[in-house]
Every structure is written in C-alpha cells, then in structure tokens.
Length: 138
Image (cartoon, rainbow, N blue to C red; front, top):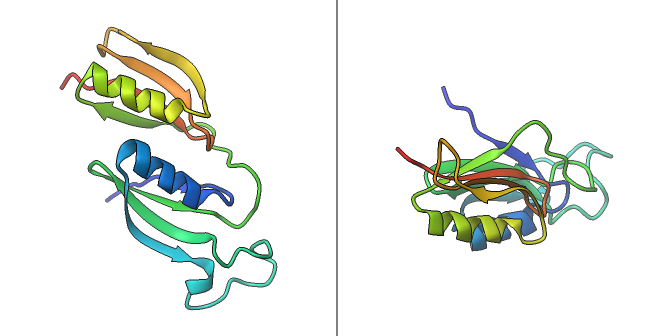
C-alpha cells in the first residue's frame, strides 16, 4: 500500500512545480497537459483556455514522489488540514530551505530549537501549501 500527496494548484501547477524545482531540487517525473489527454474532458469541466494547463504531474523531492494538477477550476489553491514535512540534515539546510519556501508566503512559526529538533518551523508558501521544516535527529 502507498499513500501520496496530490496537490491541486487551481491554475498554478506549472509555476509551483518550477518553484519547488528551484528551492527543493524537485525533479519532474511525468507531466500531462489537458490538450495531451487521450480523450478531452467533458464539456464545462475545465475553464476555457486551459489546454496548456497541467492535468497531471508527478515530481520527486528527495525520496518522495508528489503528484500535482491544475485541477478543474481557476482561482487560488486551498490546502487545509495538511502540511508537508520537510526533514533536512542540518540547521543550515533548514534555514536555507525555510527561507526559500517562505519567499512570497507566510511564516507561521519561525525556525527555533524544540525538544524534538535542533531547528523546527512552519510556513505557508506562496501557493498556499503548508510546510513544516525540521532537522531530523534520526
């Protein structure tokens, strides 16, 4: 059994994937645009002009495969009740990744030492995705 995160970016998937490539080294493993689908979506399912938007993409961050789509609506993404946890090897790496992810986003808890990590913090990135960044102690 395998559970994966599937992120819906409501029209901003390509921008988000490029951002994660830049700040996290994400590598695209698969990308399908609406115009490339073997069958067109049912009428009215996607906004007009979405032929070049991403129907489905997979990308790897470290050892984890995430999936993404522009979805079937325009407007801002709403990610509620979930955070992606990014575990890194050092405080310096945590600081760099945290700062990069926070650019254009909102810091909800600045990086600080906690009882479970030498450096832990939370933020919401510019796409509305919630992140927990921490130095792994294992």
